[in-house]
Length: 276
Image (cartoon, rainbow, N blue to C red; front, side, top):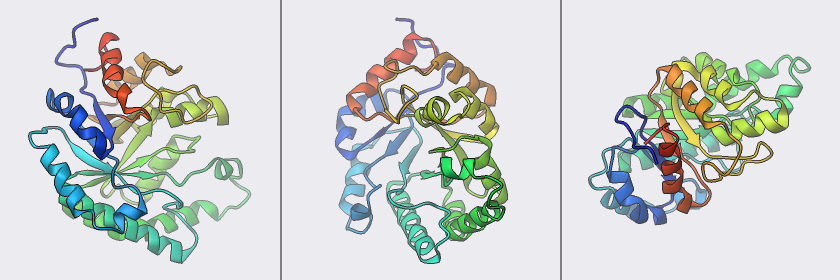
């Protein structure tokens, strides 16, 4: 194995609450960024999560990396055409900001509203582009204003996105207030392999210096696998070369289904001379 050099980017991870203790030493060996996955579900956000937040703060005593949470996403889009749904989504993200305040987090991951269906029907419904922007604006305006006051950035993650420029155009329309771009490598690889999107490194390059966050997971191009790094077919040298070329300093978050693969994934990327 090659020895990591100080100028290599530092890896972090997305972890459930039950995974924090097992990864504490790894999280503290360098200023590793961390994403909390314990506050995604409605049942948690609607309940009393104060003890969970307090225990999180206790477990992370001494942690020097950047901290954030994955925001809620189940069952909705940030650009719903239904006014009553937009109210619910706004409330969910306000709850996410409440959590951020409690754990001293500075990012919230939110999901892109762009779909395969929407991409393939461009031009057939000319008002859709404007309706998407306006629906997202109404949903997010109070959330973005509060996030900006808190020093929190909402990271807009590609999900079904085929064109990596779509999220940037939406953020531009929203004046980039408290917004940055997130690239999920497995989602991009799925789009490339199954729906006609470009390779993963193209998604990274398209984000440019607006790249604030990357979910690192390996996959096969057919589905959203969240495999350990090295177990799929993503070309990692191309991905990390593209990240370096953006000039950005994104949070590099290993987001794996099996958390036992987090440290082996980090070691794999170290052995490739790509990260530490």
